Amino acid sequence: MTRTWIPPTLFALTGLAIATGQTMKGNPGTAGMLLLVFLTLAGVCSPLVFPKTTGALEARRRSAVDGRPVVFWRPGCPYCVRLRLRLGRASRQLYWVNIWRDPKGAEMVRAANDGNETVPTVFAATRHRTNPDAQWVREQLPPST
Image (cartoon, rainbow, N blue to C red; front, side):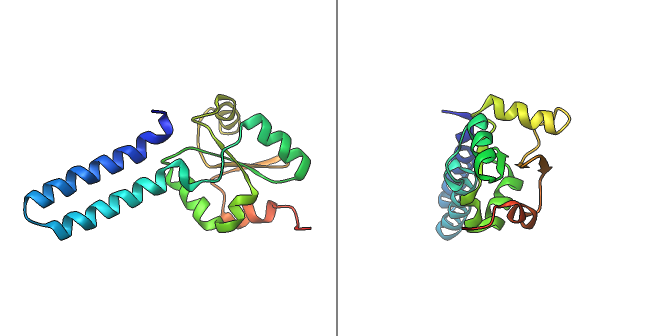
């Protein structure tokens, strides 16, 4: 199992354990609701919520050609999830780099953030922002043709 699946797996297993305990206490309704909450958290933290991940070098190369920003993220990061949800459909126009899968991406994030792997970090042209506002990210998108 890769590191990207650890947080969602822990959420799912925790939810299953709590739901089992509630069922044994005679609270099947509470068990079902808690299981649903934990499975939702597992889904939100999973890599499945984010668009396809690209390697850092390839993402930067493509960004130089078409001007689309590059977002460095990691699974389980609530700020990454928040940015992804606030961007909505616009998130599909960005290049997403999972720093847990790409050591070069993690290195680029550390270089931009004084040695810290703080995400989301967005590179747009020659600028970068850490934990940016979704509106700023949208403004960095090239105009539609």
